[in-house]
Image (cartoon, rainbow, N blue to C red; front, side, top):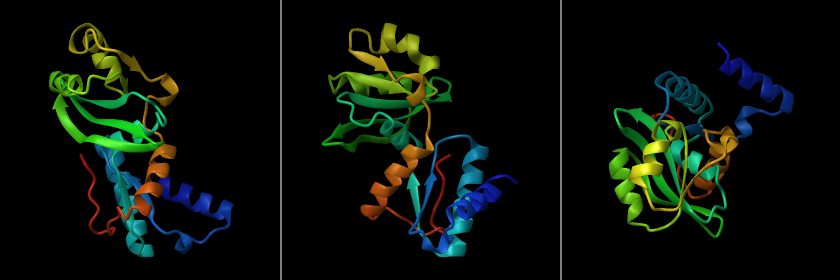
Length: 184
């Protein structure tokens, strides 16, 4: 009810034709079931109608991109409940986001073990921080140099999805609208 009229309004305000676009970026998950379904269905519908490819940007990749330029390891954590998180491990090299460990669903303890092998400062962000912050400080990452992203960079942001989508487009990381599937 809201998303398509908003897209139409933005296109009208910009005076553009949707056929001019090269591809459609979509936050591919994980995330809320309803949000992913709405976003993916809208992107797929537009992609099919316009015959444009979709660029699937994993949510944790986009979250890591919020900390562009950091010299620490970046570890987005999304609360998956029952002591589990959706996470990934990233670093920046020459201003380029490098995926050290792909998006995963993992126990917070196992994630800590993986991070210990890197022996570097880690910056955490995401909605898993309030849930696991105390355990990370006192037990899981005890004695390690860690930090937590500031509030304004702590959540998913459309700008990060868009910026990564441009990079992925240049690298040829696209799929047809029919092929796209969200990561629930």
